[in-house]
Length: 266
Image (cartoon, rainbow, N blue to C red):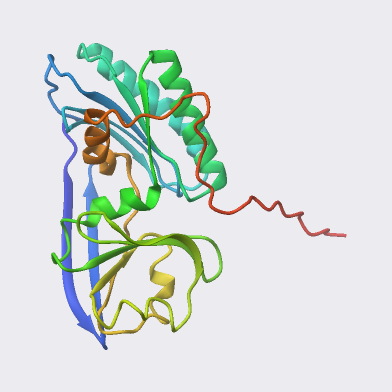
């Protein structure tokens, strides 16, 4: 039985800031579409940069298999299961996996290590090409068709406290502001907001709502980078042969990892 995937958007005004509310309903049944057997472009997608762990399979740009988990700290347990199921599905339907696409960050250090390691291992083992995408670009791609044409896209990934990993894109995914780790305050994005509507989304966005109060700010909650959101980008990269070196490809952490010691109880 197929999954039912429903996206509904409600736009309304609250004080001076526009807010977009999103609700998503996904049945618990496996999501299977009938794959085209003579496909030339079958790609396995992996996304683990945030708390969501997801894996999908696409054939000529069509989603044919999808798994998602929104439970925290399950990447190490579930990702291998998801990719194994995807490979079994591909083999059952006579599909050869031509490429592995992975979200490469910034995001969770642990999540990125798990996802990139899995992707590199699969690419090597299957003899497939490796494709990597910045996580913020994946988020922007997912939202580009869901906001007004002139609205800029500002994905945000939580980096603790009032800091976020962020970038600004236009509708064509051209970079307006490069990726950075930004501490949000009342002056953030004020060079752009007077002249453009900006959609803020991702797991780091909503905590910034009380500080970014310009009327041109639009906040869209409950948006996460997903493997199923990588399909268009992956297919375009595959057609253009934009591949990574399996041996040397690494996650884009943006910031150095800082280990902390637990406080002594006694």
